[in-house]
Length: 595
Image (cartoon, rainbow, N blue to C red; front, side, top):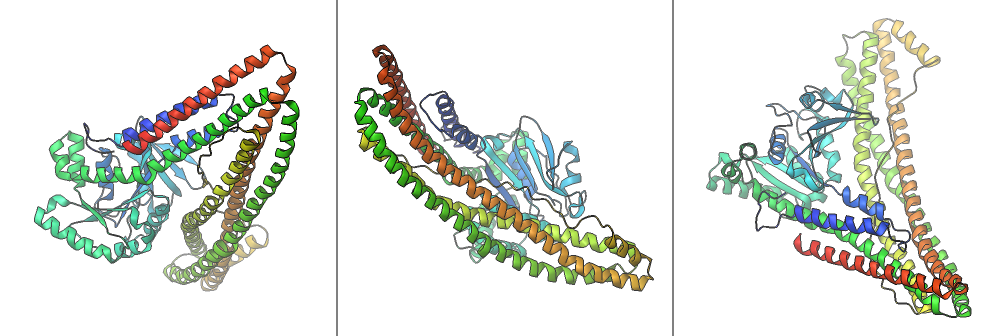
């Protein structure tokens, strides 16, 4: 990601090198006979899909889109003199420029790049009337390689409240927030409030002071000093501020001008961001995968050596040791169930004490706001026909409810996912402890050495939720609507107002129920997934130990030649496992020092 080459560490290049080295080890492990229950494909996917989400946020008209164009070195996103971006736009690496529009409801459509403004701008898609969820732009920029994704959010504080909501929703998913300010505009109230609300992300915010080329070095120093003092009032940590010129940076990249790029000051920011990403996420990802691989290899080595030992031990001795091991297994299974019960309890607690309480607050506030807004809309629509007024008010309620619950889902998702992950992290060491104690017991019982390795794991956040307000009007509901439209204007409109007040409560309650159902189902599914993971890890350890011993016992009735052949296979397998362990350790050390 850094703008410099040569003797200086490239960071992302090292990250890619370490990642490729671990992927090569995984490919070899998949072909090994003695690596049982290896989640190798999951670990490979975790490496390949490990993305760095850089969320670009700030007040409208600070130059966020210009900065993104400068980062990738091409004029791809539309720029205007009015508040423009209205939809989340994600830039990711691809071999060629492609634009895909993702709509609410899982529908996706590829569009021509020149049609992008029709979907992401307030002019082309006012108040998101096209129901766009987000737009993904693929582009072959070196800046986007190795999993870096740049997320362009609508500006906060514009006249479009829904744009501010969209900007807030994406923050919990960020690895770093690039918050753009400008030398020609003071810190606004909207920006100050925004920073206060996202205080928990303070250690992940980089402040970029745009249009730095407008000021002299002395003036720029004064501007940065003033801004730092103001930002301290909203943050709990020292703000990191980088003066930049998006205009000069784009010019430098497009024209290949090192002088313009240097004057833009963008390379200094890129270097600091690279360091942050590598320390915050890159090292963690690589270390997590490496530790998991070492743990799997350690267990595979133990099972191979256990079978080797069984080839020469007396049959009666092995049978007695298996009996003792079976008793230990029974106790371990009870402990495993205790962990599952703890997770079930935590899941119920999250629903009752977090989700339902948050939904209650949302329903109350949204119902009041919609009631007030409904009166204003009703008065503004005095010149409409009864049918037109009905359609206008219902559309208003539907849009507001959809927007409110969409924002709630994003923030609640971050809260529940974080709480669930914390519980999983708390319980995971206990699962590792169960497996380690089981293997250690077998190690002592069969006099075979075993080396435990610590590792960690994750929860995915996919939702199948879709919006549904009420069923198509039939029977009595259709009849009431028809009578209302046929009544004299003033009478019909009063009935419409009363009907819409009831629809507010219906829409809010129905969506609350659907959102609750979706989150509960996801939490329960995640709990089951973790339960299955516990069972799989314990079962794999038990089966591996028992299978290794039984294979050795079965070979005792075979010829000496067959026993010798199997011993040779096991020795070669042990050598391969040792070699792979050494490679993973070496690669992991390379990542720790080079990144």
